[in-house]
Length: 320
Image (cartoon, rainbow, N blue to C red; front, side):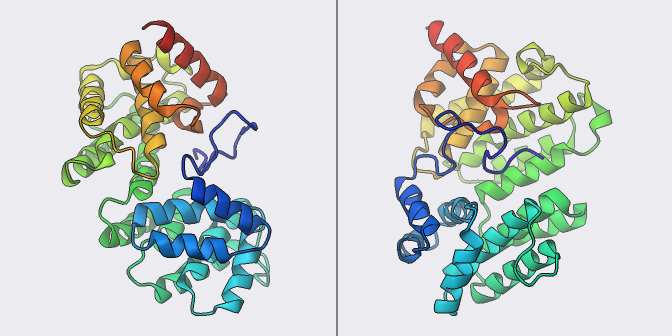
């Protein structure tokens, strides 16, 4: 499973802070690590029903080592707080994925995580974030039916949910690795469908590129593609070039800098342009990315993501 937040192989000052360019989120996370949740509460209140931003912020906040314990304290102090319940849900999910059971769970960390998500969902029925927590858990451990059901739950509350679509693409890409370079693989159909269903300015326009990278990860891990993506024909076929061009053209027109996970999309798109052999287009994307280097897809299939990024950026910027 590709890392959710870049914890794998992360080295200080190299891979991006999972908060990306959200300064308020980074500040609130620091406060939470010190046991102070007032700043977190104000941040989530201000986020309101911006569901992509709320999901991004809660998952980043939840990833702290002590976040679950602080969320439990917050919920004890404010038992009606849906924000505290959602933070506890996400933190319990991530703690379960790290193999740590919650307090009083008797080692049943996964079940404790599911119950925390269900409790948060009951407190805020319109919020897709508790369902996102369940999807994060199921993406790693659930059945195909469970993943599909949870994705539908998220999408019924926010049809364009960015993180949920990325999780679904990663999971679908892992089906039938033995099929190799199948242009009709279901992950491509899913990504094309999602991009077509989304509004014109939606960053889901980049999802077909994400799907292409996730499928490369699977094929390279299986040994049917080179472990250096730049040497793989995966990126240079007709369908691949059409996908890359459509996504890059979308970016030129819309440049959704306001989206909380914008830098993730830019990393996927820059990586694709490098692999496609389009350094000038990649250079424009590297300028926008700045220092926000994400582990996916630069680490695919098993590379040092920072080294791969810096080498690609140096080559692209040196070509223009």
